[in-house]
Image (cartoon, helix red, strand yellow):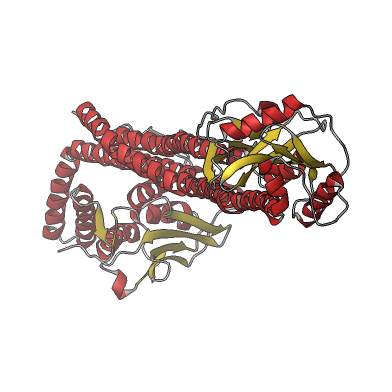
Length: 587
């Protein structure tokens, strides 16, 4: 049955400790993983916000600033080229294929056209002009202007420019040439010249590409940015990587790290493509935040499970030991390996188990002693019962024969045997124990008439208090037999007293005699015997003192018993220390 109860406890503990572990697990998750996850989430959100802000900022710069600046550049070229219409004579000479004659009266056409181009150059907002020249539709060059370097141009070159303008529908067109007659990249603006609405020639303005590149690339401020400008046919006319200019534009593959912005550049047919990647630092911060969240979650789960198991394991062990104690295994103890609260609880459990074991062993020992006493008393009742009847008969004979002393002795002795034979009560009133002592002293006084004087002082409130039975008579007998009778003094006194100490919670009984007393060595020997678990086997060993002291400790507790104070030639005092209880024995 005990084993079944133990197994039932084992089955009950599983769901109980699972709930405890789950509570600890959730608490650890909430206190560790949650704050770290929130922090990582904030970092991840901040990185995402920074990336989004970069995209919005780039879109704003490209769609507004760069687009506007390129528009201004295009407008400045158109204004520069449009100045040709400020000279009608020049337009007429181009259209009618005649000499350019001005009112300067110099008749120097080359110089006059050069002065006109110089005026246009000086008034143009663009300062990177490398050359300007006018080409008639029949491929004749009417005039040119080169501020610094005069390139070597032939008819095929002019023909190719006229053909490029024709392909553009005789509309203004801007070209970017990375191979030019100037030995450097240039921007070439082809501006058709019309007369009465019909194209009659072509004005070509060549500019350095470097200025335009600086203008465009000043907006390329993001990581691995790439600006591409394509014309209406999809050909690349400008590329951050100049080696890719002139080829068909192929968009860069877009992934989670790449951002793309596209916009039309006015009515020129140009289209601007801007791609850039997220800054690796931002990606690193984002990946670190994600990694922290993942690692934190794994660590939190692992540590929480480990802590929940490590915290509940000693409790489960303690619970199982409680089950062992429940089924009667009082030797069960828990192993304490820590000094924390769990270790303190384990030590307290071990102390409790040890105390329970001591109390059970004490109770068992007391029961065995009482059983043994009762068996011996029952076994011995046959002879005392016969003796008791004999004493009653002797008392009757003494009364008939008028022998009062013999009658008194028989009555006192029979009362003592009747008191001894009553084994029902373990505790008796002090007054009953004193009456038993009086019967004993009656016999002693008849034995030694007038030899021993007796004083009994019992506080009224102590008379009905309960004490273990038969603890005074053996001590009084020792005081008479070993103290008073051997004493050479003539005034022999035996004093019994009782006192209640309410503050201490104890009842004190005193048996005092002025007999022969004991020396220091004898008192130490008796104290040593009283401290033992078993009495000594010697015949002269104070077995009475040991039995009384042992019975008091077994019945009342370890803190109670007797102690002896004595002085050789002066007397001895035996002090009883008993627990004070207010209950009384019903009559």
